[in-house]
Length: 160
Image 1: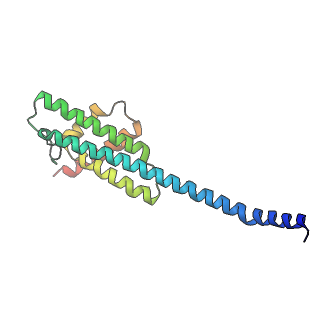
Image 2: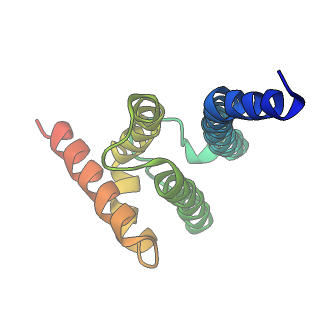
Image 3: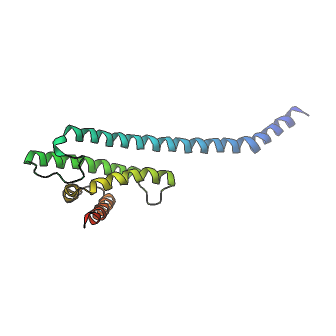
């Protein structure tokens, strides 16, 4: 076989096998990178929530880990409680904006379910629900609708 025919045959083999393989590897690596980015975002959000929980422990007098609204607070404590709720709303909004989609794949739905659980847990507190009108102006409108809906559902569960 002459040299040119050999090169031509090798070129066809690369085109037939190598190009599709290269495309497959590229798509596979892109998907893997996207999953890694999602994992990183989820971890950063989780770290943010963990930091909030640590902060709530530093302000134990506000009884943020209680399921019930904290009563009998003085003005300074009420201000700190509102600030803590504002931090929480900012974290929830960030999670909503980067992690929520109406039609998510199952993997993302599982991750989102944990955030919705956190939101529902806080929406069960009457003082958190009562603070929402003060906390939500200026937040993402879709997020505000979403958390109000959760708050209404959790308030309805509290009724006897």
